[in-house]
Image (cartoon, rainbow, N blue to C red; front, top):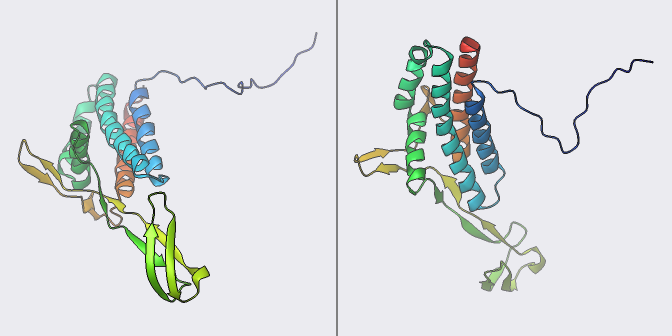
Length: 216
């Protein structure tokens, strides 16, 4: 008889099991929030982008709810420790705005808007006169060019870009403008996915600190 040593391999279709712990539920919500941001960053349609934004907004707020419940079960000292972060969620422009965005999402309100957008006709390689241009719903075009180099002619669609709207809470007659600051620092990129990433980093930091302090 001989001994054989090696490592257990996972089957190709296998899903790695997760060990149950008190922080599992909030961790899952953070993972889902990050996927929402990734969906926005790689979106090629407004539906994909809106879906990613809703995914992030819902998951980030669900994270906080689960985080609060998990922390209370971890230690009686959790709630006092969490107090300053709770206050930040009501005073920080970004965090407060996202809380309101979740309310809008739940009640079918407008959570994003679209700005700009235009059609570029001709292209940088074309110089001439355009007598007529017709664009079909399918995206095909026909142009009558009176002069210039017709083989350099292009029609380029620059779609509208996503932006954060002013959120109006009609019940309490409140308005929440798109945030300009986060943790006393100016927000340089105001795109929804960039703003979401700032919030995710904040929540990931708070979660990590809680795990280090109250890990069982």
